[in-house]
Length: 175
Image (cartoon, rainbow, N blue to C red):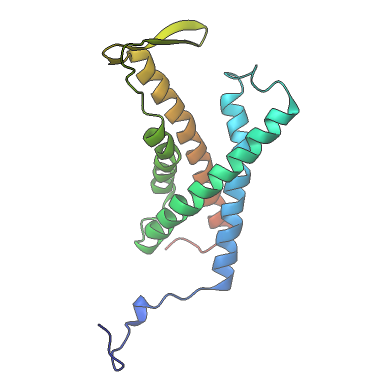
């Protein structure tokens, strides 16, 4: 419990520098605005039929902007702050964090499920593959899970690289 006479350590006081805050906002905006383009480049060759009209592309882009904004603000900025505060901010560390943070939501939500009494199959890369059997997810389901997680990890990698280079170009120099 704090008393009226207790002192606050100077390093515990957080100062908000307007230039740093504005630069952080601009780098977050740059990383987020690039994500629909990254998604179209990564997933368009596989889902060419799904992107048949401009309405679907616009809806997809808006959905990607919303999701990437949430992920960057809730996970990416705190990770950046932690790396920067500990003096461990580098291209490699932020890239690894970007890959992990980009793939994390899908890794948690898209986990292959077991369907009781049913098997599932789907077309993947031109082949009909069995994704689950009575015993659980098949190898093809785990490979599709890893492939999609890697795609989202590439989203995170590109976002973290854009963030890093724009922060270094216009932000605070490295320690």
